[in-house]
Amino acid sequence: MEHISRRVKALSVSQTLAMAQKSRELKEQGIDVISLSLGEPDFNTPDDIKEAAKKAIDDNYSFYPPVPGYGDLREAIARKFREENGLNYTPDQIVVSAGGKHTLINILISVVDPGEEVILLAPYWVSYLDQIIFAEGKPVIIQTTIEDDFKVTPSQLEAAITPRTRVLIFNSPSNPTGMVYTKDEMAALVRVLEKYPEILIISDEIYEHITFSGSHVSLASFPSITDRVATVNGVSKGYAMTGWRIGYMGAPLWLAKACNKLQGQFTSGVCSIAQRAALAAVTSQSDSKEKMREAFVRRRDLICRLLGEIPGLKVRVPQGAFYVMPDISNFIGRSYNGRVMKNADDLTFFLLEEGRVAMVSGSAFGADNCIRISYATSDDRITEAVRRISEALAKLN
View 1: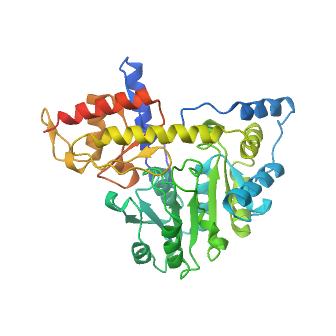
View 2: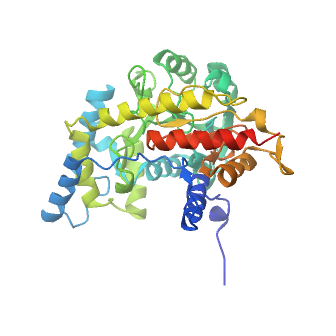
View 3: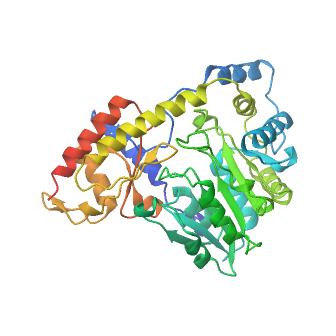
């Protein structure tokens, strides 16, 4: 007997993971594929963090941890929010979960009733949409364009709000575009949100340590909306700890309690050893974050310069994260050996098969005329990848 629930049937397979799997399969066949699909730093976890994990094993951190996270970790996260972001969360407003994805689904299940609307700003991170659907919410998507740096305007935001709006998901620095909202741009959006006190804002700030101009601004730092912002973060990107699976949030106490209750029934407290490593990360005095940021800004400049030399490709220089999202509209409708590029999906698979470079179609992010490129790899691989992309695109006519 096979019976899959409608909730799971409604979910799509993550296209970022699907493309990574496709490129792995080709590599196993002996084909040299350069993968620029996954959002994962190519650095190793810093040594001081690894040492903390080893010590945790020796110190017998092998028992069930508290559901929302160890007290000293939550205190350290609260201190980080206060010192780095100007946010006054108390430790009981912090919930530690198994990565940012886990944090996000905890929030959405806790606050969204069937049919309530959740506003998404496209291009959006791939899992937002499916998580909203799983929570039985209704996605309301606002489209942005490369000409506007993929940023939403206050008038667009206001036009999307209805009496059914429950949540806005905000992400800066952005995955997939790499764009970063300035404080003034955020202030203009806040002025709209001030009129609608019933809307909860989820501010996904997982890439805060990878910004290239100015300093990161947390949405909850605007006093008029502080009490209805859930600030989502984690150690994956800034500390090269994707596999450790530690995310966290600072939120209004009522929401933290709800997520704590939910997590207590689903997963309980997350991996004890990973939590001790996360404590070392959050309190680390090493310069590992800055070294990674310097590498990413160098790579960004390299890949944007090379992509900018490809005729017909539209590129905006991102201000954070480690993604660039070219507009490929000029190549839609072109063909190679009778194979027509009808959309970004077609072009992405063409570039994988003909150029041997794996990227992710913009359709996964609500941007059908774009592709997402992760430049979290070496300078040499970036140079070779763009050479292959250029050669493959030149075959289209």
